[in-house]
Length: 322
Ligand SMILES: C[S@@+](CC[C@H](N)C(=O)[O-])C[C@H]1O[C@@H](n2cnc3c(N)ncnc32)[C@H](O)[C@@H]1O
View 1 (cartoon, helix red, strand yellow):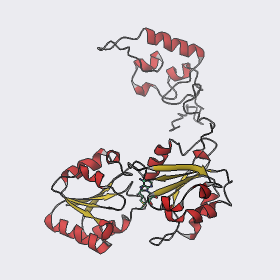
View 2 (tube, rainbow, N blue to C red):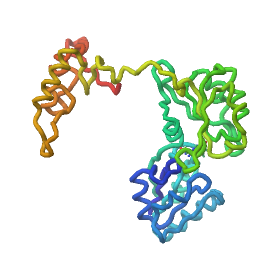
View 3 (cartoon, protein in one colour):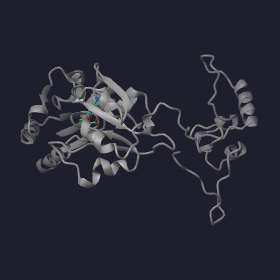
View 4 (cartoon, helix red, strand yellow):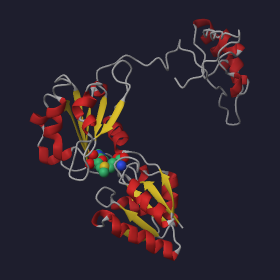
């Protein structure tokens, strides 16, 4: 018998992972946080599954459900909104399961902060603006936030802030942030990202409270704050710059580009008559991917800078994710 903590995603039934949905198709006992997980997500469950809404159960009562399933020898799916690792109150359930000798596994989910960014069409990290995303909340009735994590402290970094559970506290949050961010700092409110009644509002820290009715944003709302939300063009990342080489792509120089185009023109067609081209230089395209290492002749010939030599005289490979 096993309990699966499954990230249900932000609300849209097709934003649960394939792994999560497959478990739901199989298990006969499902516990779900009904206040945040819409019933539509339960479409992945078996028609004969027992569905238990945990919104009205305390921890002891939830433990009783786990005990019953243990006695019956059946697996349980425990659905949490977004990703279970964030404000999911999963840690205390896991401790209880450990005491009962019940095995568990976590299946991650799409968190609401990424769904909110998607709904806004925003990237939360932009070069020279912010490369850090802080996920936080303010103290509420259920959980206090440690003093050192007060918004005023976090704001000092000027990072992109995603403030969860912020709906009932918008006035307080804007008040706490205002001394630390300029009034024209972009903010966005997103209510029920990915639900059919999703809403969002873009504004600035200085204006937002004048533009909204607080009661419209009390529940299931995320507040995002930071310069990265601006729709003004920002400095571009070097990642896709044509002259920026890295382990998976050589720098594009004029001659090299012309050579590749010539290579593409002579590339063979596949069975459907499409030209077979990898977009890499012909030499690299011909070989397996491992040939495209930082010190491969193909890469160096393409105009990439030669890797530095180490103290032993060997070339150091620059193997990074960016
Ligand atoms: C208890 S927390 C759960 C967070 C969840 N584990 C996650 O990863 O998104 C609930 C808060 O998450 C945010 N939230 C959850 N789903 C949301 C959605 N679809 N749209 C906007 N905010 C959402 C709201 O701030 C809400 O008050």
